[in-house]
Image (tube, rainbow, N blue to C red; front, side, top):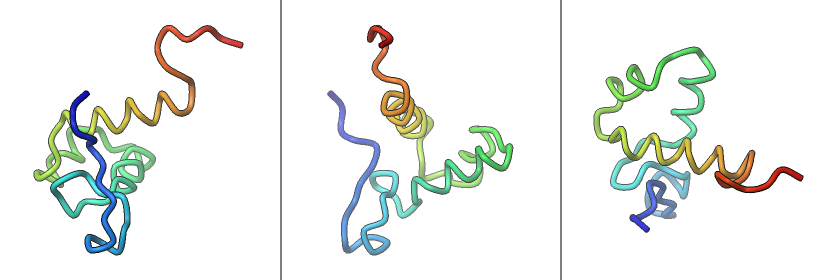
Length: 74
């Protein structure tokens, strides 16, 4: 498995979850999407975040909410 796209470090943004290797809080991606912005707009505004990091964060959120792909529905 690749390194996590999210980093939590008390010395970076007071421990706020950020995209690994950046100071961009993960929450900002969610807020952009809630406001109707596309992933491309987010990435243009935060060029230190890679597309693969953003997609992986969204995949992790999806897995937490609806389960892993192929998992049987209860």
